[in-house]
Image 1: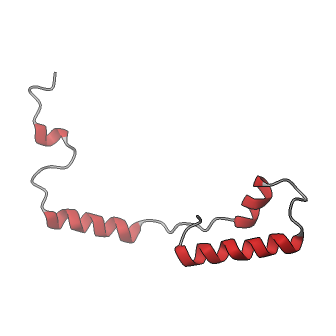
Image 2: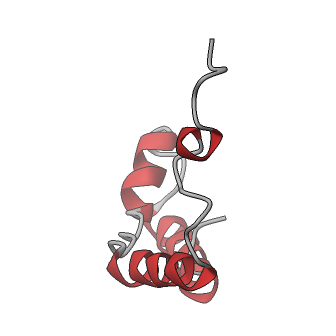
Image 3: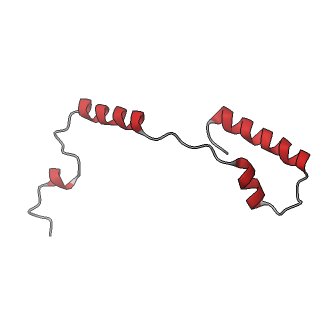
Length: 77
């Protein structure tokens, strides 16, 4: 079915694209990607766990631990 099709065109990127051009595209994508928004840890906890499971002090301590973890690693988990 694809016997007559040019294999270079079927790949998406042309085989003639230079490494420099690929690097330019990669750099452009890195600089223009939108910044990741930080997760709302408080809302996540309130949705995930039943009301009354944590008192206010426990919730604040847990939030502090989770947000420090997000700050250090850049993502949750």
